[in-house]
Length: 247
Image (cartoon, rainbow, N blue to C red; front, side, top):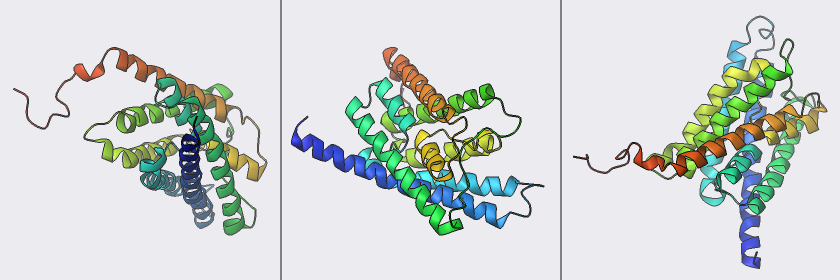
């Protein structure tokens, strides 16, 4: 790798750090705000708080991707890095550099959130809640991460006339994933998000799930993408991106 390549990779990785910081600050800052605003209702009806938190994660991620997409690609997730690597869309050096940057960005954001919002009483670490088994949490995170990474691959990595929708639609997916999984695992689908929150809170129980499951989900998405490329999926339903109606 030439000095120029190293410089470019460093700039892209720094952008991943900044994008991750923006995403996690908005998302987990939203967690603190929602839990404080709805503290009296949480034990009775936490639905509104869950909706607010899910919106912060979805729109926070969309915003961060809109910022970083043209510079680094806006991966903002080690599971996405790994999925793109398995799919052949990202090289190992980039995946490693991005992962380090994302872990640092998420950790920095969680620390700043803990200082600003609740004087070190930080909420939002991923964990298995009461009644949730390891198998349930694991497969929930695998499936949700698979859906996220396959969306990234076909909407953002594969270029088409709808690629410009990618940041918002990825955010919508993350919004829905959080609505689904907050009561079970607090919704990870992103090892860097989990790592930063655990660093700040000291909650590490079952933390391995929030690495292994998302990476498995990302890898499966990468393999499925390779399969579709192998069968030349573009020819299965031709004309979807045609400028004119096919006769």
